[in-house]
Image (tube, rainbow, N blue to C red):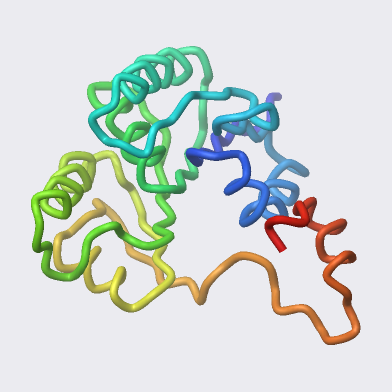
Length: 187
């Protein structure tokens, strides 16, 4: 019997390693975890661009569709705005798709979108909400946005933050860097 396959997705490997390494390691004990990011640490490295209307992101979208056809996934954990949007867009039209949990690390638009960019970002989130089975948010504003615009087909969870725990005073920064594989520039 095969272990369940989980796709863990973010637009950068550094995001995956900085914020999700303990979760990835824990999931890997009982599941096959496939990493999708932008570098050598990922099983699938894709050239994400931060600009929504980038030719690079069009290529990423088509590669994601191929990956989704190839892998028989049991669940998807999506992070970062661009990666989670493109992944959910690539799932559209798929007859059988795995459940998708999106963790919002901060929406890129406010409670009341003002400029054209914010309206486009909100439109994109609404476009893929039918591919969103649950959302986890980390602040009150994102919770209100997700509820107000009904950005999920399922539940919306509130998390009390994530990332590195606050170290005790006895732990030196060099110990933290070693433990979490963080470069000197990052901490």
